[in-house]
Image 1 (cartoon, rainbow, N blue to C red):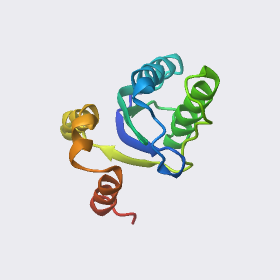
Image 2 (image 1 turned 180 degrees about the vertical axis):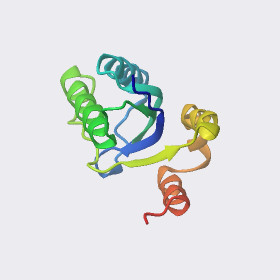
Image 3 (image 1 turned 135 degrees about the horizontal axis):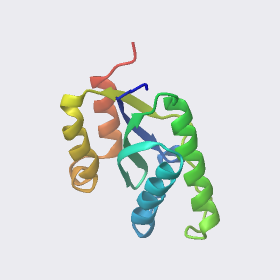
Image 4 (image 1 turned 60 degrees about the horizontal axis):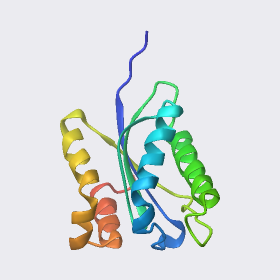
Amino acid sequence: MSYTRILIHCVWTTKDRKRTILPVIRKELIQHFIEYANAKEIHLLEVNVWENHCHALISLGRNQTIAEIMRMMKGESSHWLNNSGKLPFKFLWQDDYYAVSVSESHMKAVYRYITGQEVHHKKMSWEEELNLFLAKYPNS
C-alpha cells in the first residue's frame, strides 16, 4: 500500500484577471469546488475564491499530477458556472496557474492564509500579492 503526502498551494486567476467572481456566487463556487473534488478523489484541504482568483491547498494523490488537477478543477468549474445561469457573461479561467509545494510545518500557515483572503485583500491587491509570490518563489 503506497502512501504519499505532497502538499501543493495552487493559485489560478480569471481570464485577463477580470473581477468576474461576484460576491453572490463566491460561497456556491467554493462549495462546488469541494463537492467536485470529493467526487473526483482530489484531496482538497482548503479552497477560497476572491474577485479574480482562487487559492487551493491540495494533497496530491499517488497517481495525480498538478497539471491534471488544475485542468479538472478549472475546466469543470468554468463549465458549471457557464451552465448555471448565475452569471450574465461567459466565465473563463486563465490558462496558467501558480503551484508551489508546502511543507507540513507550514501547512497551517497556508491554510490560514487561504481562509483569510477577504481580510487579506482589503490590505493588498491581487497584483501586489502575485508580485510577492513571484519574488519569494522565483522560477529557476
